[in-house]
Image (cartoon, rainbow, N blue to C red; front, top):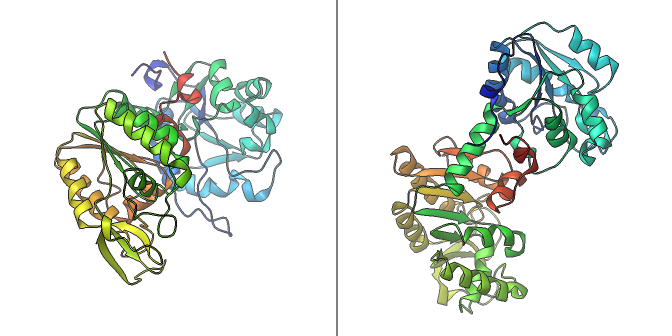
Length: 402
């Protein structure tokens, strides 16, 4: 990797290290954290910094407070979860800049952890304000970023702050960037991508980038309906599917670009249809020329499609996955996603496939399939993961180049 890591920072003993984490975790109405994944995954970086004798000052955003403080979006609610994850006391300061913060940091001992209040209580954070960044890092000797999930935003704490002190990636960001580079920038081929979603229009940049990089592209979910129609399958229409008639020419162009780049596009060969959009609704599997004209919705892929995708996976060495194959939130319409995910996991566990997945629905779908811990890497980043797959440079990553 051509990026600075903790290994490049040198002696941290007695030094103040400002750690930009992403502690934007889900919380219920009683301010209880309902999923600690983002906290847990930054613990190795915090522990390593403490073990090197650093005074660790953690900064993060939380929610969307729009530049003013409120108890709902205060990071004070996660202190107990952070303490539990670290197994040690965490001191909280109800601001992120100013004299109160500077005094608290000045009184820290080596190996201690301080958590500052929500960065987004200041509008200057989202504006990327350099003066705010200067105030933020004023008491720090070093800057470390472990917030890959926010790296697509040029916010003050992500970019301007990194330029003001010796800076580096934390272990979580390092792990994330390595996984994505191995999957897309320098993959072991053949490389296959699975992309799902409801609408083609929301994933245009992603599809246009992938058809130039991957050897095989599985297009699934509702967006596949538009490609099926564009391929001449006229039984797919606006009455029974999510086909976007205004995107047919775009779909044809993407397929043409794929062909010129020797990228094989894999579309459904059969589908599961139902009259009702609810769990355990009556359903049937039909071939593409038997799709009912109206009154039935396309909710999953059928057995032929599952077998076809799994056989393609058998031929490949690297998989990148974003988006489910069907309506995985409702049984039995999670069958296609589950079966393909489980096969990918088996190949991964057997050492035959390097598998990387990311995006909110994707993580949920793989958890539903029971394989979230059996892929090579699962990204907790949503927008940043997608923008990386779209081939865009992320400002919060670019600033950490050597």
